[in-house]
Length: 312
Image 1 (tube, helix red, strand yellow):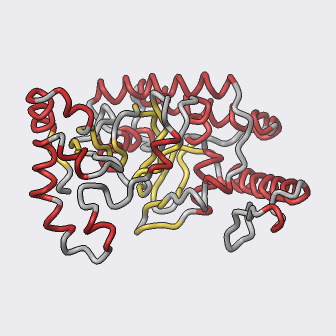
Image 2 (cartoon, one colour):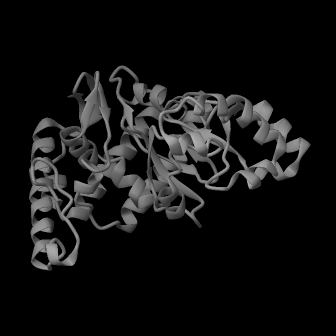
């Protein structure tokens, strides 16, 4: 917390020295993602990356804050590396930030929430450990991650915290057999991103408040009904991308259905079961194909990504 500050303080630091833009960034966490209408973080944060202390000192006002608010806590830390490199984050997540170089935006989702709904946000900010970041700006990926097939796969594979879903990428995304990312999905992803932003800003409501209305059968406001229609279109487009035209033709039974402790606007129970069966079959097929290609042979030095169910 010693690295963080309110927006007014960040503005003052940058006004005092334009160079501070190089180390002061917006900070986005899961709560802000789900609660703020513009998907922005409430706070800003100092980031000295993996720099040495001498370089950090060249930003004196920011360095002073970290000396005063971070170092006293780090001096008591049991981990030697965190005591000695107290001006750096405990976990730098270098792989994450290297993977999004050159991207203007990425798909993110709160790791733990009742909503389990991704959104597109800008890069150039620091992401909390409580967010799952998908290193892509492809709106087709936003569509598939917002779809009922992905949600029900996540619900069947993820752990839970109280009544909320806890999205663990290794258990959920890495075992999820992605469809081809089609132009139809991309168009629906763009529609979702654009229209939903307009709804949230006009209502001044965050993702959670907005989807509380989407999932409430009593709400028949025109903009909320349209959001439901967009999600229905996404579900159908994703099914077509998998080649599951029969499911679309026989109706996915969209409506208000139980999802754990909550009610959700989603596909019906029979469609849920059928899609989960097909996704599991796809998972096994793709794993078997990789084994046949030698991708999981010990001699190659690569290991299968498996969980207790033997999933790919």
